[in-house]
Amino acid sequence: MSGHSKWSSIKHKKGAADAKRGKLFSKLSRAIIVAAKEGGGDPSNNLSLQNAIEKAKSYSMPKDNIDRAIAKGSGADADADAFETIVYEGYGPEGVAVIVEALTDNRNRTAADVRHMFSKHGGNLGATGAVAWQFDRRGVVVVPAEGVDDEELLLVAADGGAEDIEQDGDVFQVTSAPESLTAVREAIEAAGFTVDSAELMLVPKTTVAVEDEAKARQVMRLIDALEDNDDVQDVYANFDIPERVLEAVAG
Image (tube, rainbow, N blue to C red):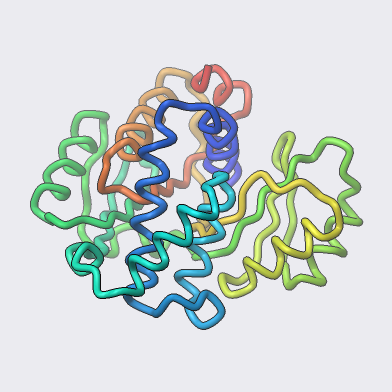
């Protein structure tokens, strides 16, 4: 997952002061509202809500916004009922597998938009199950690597329930079972480590190398277009692009 998670880390840092922050908060709120509506407003008894809150915190979403979204989803609010979760699967340039998770109140509109974006950027939308088998859902905590003792981080993360840790450039990726995400994040932070992000992700079992800058740019244009869509919550892909190329594309 190195390429995709590295790209996520780059975008995460850029997005902190980005004009799109309002749109991001709207998407995070929508996910919290729907999770609270479906499983109740108590995060300790609702894993989906717990993970939605963790992701919102990772992007510095204010606590008041989170609490309002939980209250809205827990109450008799019609907004949450209007949304349904839909997953789209397809292939991007170079055969990169792509999964798109959306929350939409109009599945026809969203399907048409997603299909158009795949086609416009050199990909094609597939049937359900086309690429899902290439991914596992995991909890992923990203920790800046500068000044960090990897053995110490490993011990701390393992105490919280983490299963693996690997370094990718200037970050460590700590993975765990989905239900252990919060405990791992809390253990890492309690030990004094900085957490860049903590969220539930689909992690690819294998990756596709994309070393040509033009092709990498095409892949990232597809990912960016999908992520910019109001109905799209998350986009996952199995590309592995060298850091120097990612930095060039991100710049």
